[in-house]
Length: 522
Image (cartoon, rainbow, N blue to C red; front, side, top):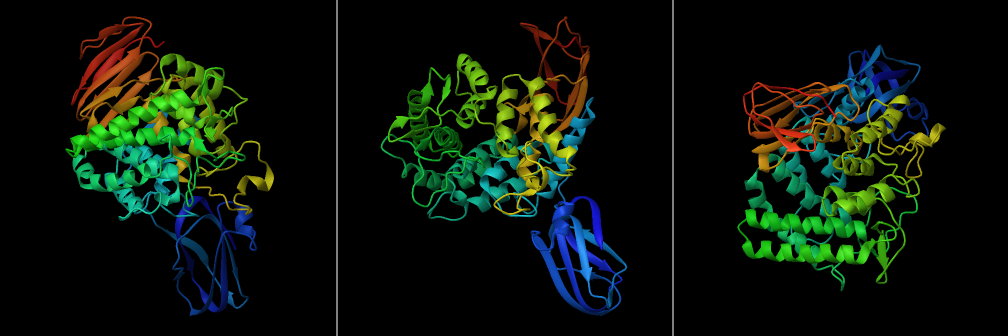
């Protein structure tokens, strides 16, 4: 029997009306090719049964869309079904717009993240089903715009950190240690949960002490024995020497430590970490910025900067706001929009590449990229988004990874980033003080005719509707600022609109009030 469950799912296969004595074999697949390739599929189950009727449920949960069932001649099965296993998180965020393909991308992203939300945020449901810090960091951000489920975030942060003493980087990966610090910073910004910071500050200190003890003579981090410098899955990507990307993440982690030290009433620590971060930030631009290439170079080897330019450090520098406006424009032109700089083929790093462009107001360009990249997976029949997608791959290669024909995960949490991008940079909602006590709504249609959605916060939701002629907003809590551009003078009966110059206008959003603005979008 060959069974198609219609979309990617996770759970337990149930054989209905099972009767007879003999062997039953299941071959699972995220694609039809995988489920039918009994010799090379990633997941399979085999059991010997002796049953006079009734139903039988396999004990192991599996990820699949398709299942091929083989059974001996003296065994009969009436039907195959499944028991769906899921985390009962509530979907609070929403997004709809004038482009049906974008709506589909958002819906499939939501399904992808939900499937990978379990006791923790895991990377993929086929493999590894593991808590990887880099994957989890992105899941936290998507979560804030879909579920706003704080316990899953804190469970994951605690599981990743483990116990003292610290003997290795988190997941043995240098960049994943830094993502752990960044995840704590974002958690506080979105939730305002100061207690979590205070309780876990000692473990942050010991983790940072480990990092500080491994710096080289110039105060930089580079891979030592036992370290994995990951960055991204990319052919030919150098991990040698002092990689600029790692220093950027290290600097941000030190800034996070300075902020959390203040919250934990460690004034001496706050001063120490802030000083180290400021010194490191100066060194990064003194050592890595190349005026001729208008970018940060990829690495230093034996104390000398290389000529190689990659996207990673440059795009993070934009949304970390480490660059002045002139350098941001240089990076956009000479790196992000430059086809001679090696392209990114994983949703993992496309997340950050597109975020950096959104942070510079390139929503129209990003929307096209989103439709090409995530839409490309949809055109191949994807019902969840993948671990890696290279549009140039054809045939059986689209499922291959790690030297295995079906090694690639077709339901990977880091593929769901449109949830975050559309919530933060199109609806334009983000906290400006911890826990959404103050927040900004800065919508950008990016070429859409209209869009609407809901963004969850700790104490209710923020609802936004935007067309080329009208904006409607409401919020259950907090004090918001609606900022928008209009060709003509806008009007609002519920609030005073303040002109800020350059066709930019603002109004104050109070909780419990429904605001309607008539305007003419730029």
